[in-house]
Each structure stands twice: as structure tokens, then as C-alpha cells.
Length: 203
Image (cartoon, rainbow, N blue to C red; front, top):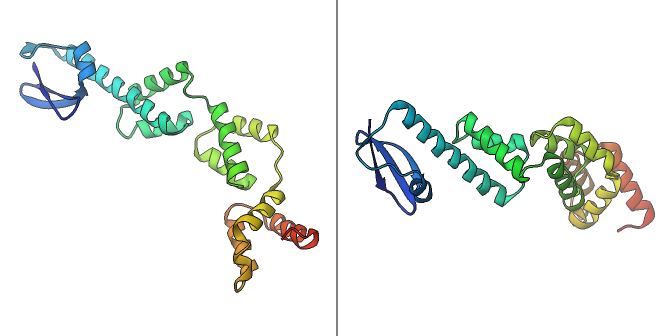
């Protein structure tokens, strides 16, 4: 098999075998793993090169995704598998874990605080969101046990900050209650919040 390369856009390098395109890498990788055009390589050498290219691709994808926001291990792996093979996805994740860029416990705590403090979401919604992110159930339970949750207080704050205007419209209370229910709040907590507002002069 005769290997050669062509420069692509930006830093891209296209690798060819017997003048047929096979895979794309970048200038930095190619400068470290350069093979002269016209070199005859065997199948084992080719597979080693492809594996190295795919591993670099997986690691770079991890850096890109994690630079945007934190991820759980399961969530990150799912995204990697859209473009990367399972072996290299797992190796890249191991690297992120070793570097401390992935930590499901830390992520779960950060996610809880964001959803509870900032978004004012219900306990049910938070648990569901954590499960969907792929966080293990024992981590979820630990995080929830570490934090006191007052769904009624969050509902009161939501009503005062977000839904006060809606209450003035036709069937306002029913519409607000429906919106709160969609956020995962129980009917009893919603009723308690309205009772607190109506009897303690919150609005």
C-alpha cells in the first residue's frame, strides 16, 4: 500500500492510500508522525496510523466539548460515539479522567446547584435530569442527601418572579399551576405555595 498526503483547508491533512482518500488528520499530528509520500506500508502499519489519528480526534473532541460545559462520563461518551470508534472514545475518556477534566460527582453537584438555585426546578425534575445525563444513581442520592430541598419555597419564588403577570390573565392561576406541574412540581407542593403566598402576603 502506497501512502501519500494532500494539504486540505486550514490545518487539515488528507491521507491517501494508492491515490485514494482514506482519512483526515491535522498538521500537528502529521508533523509528528510524518511518512514520506510513496512509502510502501503494510496493513499493520496502516491500522496503527489510523488508530492514532482516531485517538487524537477523540481527545480533541473531548477538549472541545468540555471547554463549552461540563459533562458526565456517559454523556461525553455518547457524543464521542457519533464520530469516533468505541475503543478510542474510551481511551480518550480515560485520559480526561486522569487529567481531572471529568468527575461525575463534581458535575452532579454543579448541576444540582444550577438547576435548584438558578432554574428553581423541582426535586423530581433534577433527579430526572441527572439520570438523563448518565449520572449513577448512588451519586445522585449522595448529592440530594447533601442538600436541603424546599420545593414550596422555589415555587413561591417562581410565581413571584416569573408568573406574577400570568396570574392576572384569564384562568391565570390554572395556567400557572399547569406550568409548574410541567416542571415536575407536585400538586400538593403547588397548592402549598399558593397558600403561603395568599396567607403571608408574598405578592
